[in-house]
Image 1: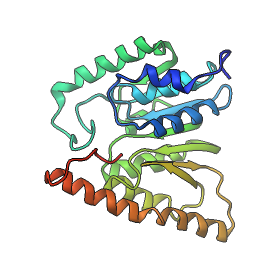
Image 2: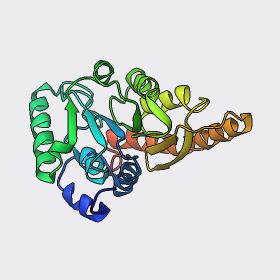
Image 3: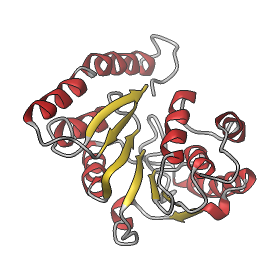
Length: 242
């Protein structure tokens, strides 16, 4: 633990003006995961944008914990309906990320790797205690992140995935890789942020229950996709579901 107990309310004040897609409940989920990261452990975040979630993780984690943020800031996969074509914004994203971490007082707590997540696999050789995936939301890169980086998570470690059962690509990646997988137990979700623990029993009934709990989220997924279509068609005015 930090010498001073990390404070969620104070952390939320730090990120109040930092742009990003993270509800208060999701921030609390990240905060709890970081607080519970073991002393001397490693937290890896894939997809940092302008640092909102990074600040939460770095503020909550014990000073002995290494916090690694992986984001190429290349102008792609920036957020809802911003898949590519934002190269002109890339420099601003990177500059604001650094400035926001400095303003929050956590710049020296974070190791930023400005690479795509697949390239960063060769840079990071540590086992991971907490993995937060909020990278590319298309099926292939999302599944690659879940599989390749998930393999790095220690037994008993935590994996959190943003836009689960909200993004089509991320949801398909989860269905393919985790629903009937043999290692990660579905713990629950904070809106579209799912929580997994690398402690799934080898027992067949436990695996079937684990699959059932995830498949039970599909009606919520259908609702989110329908809402996104209506928002895109400007038929409703609502917050983009995340």
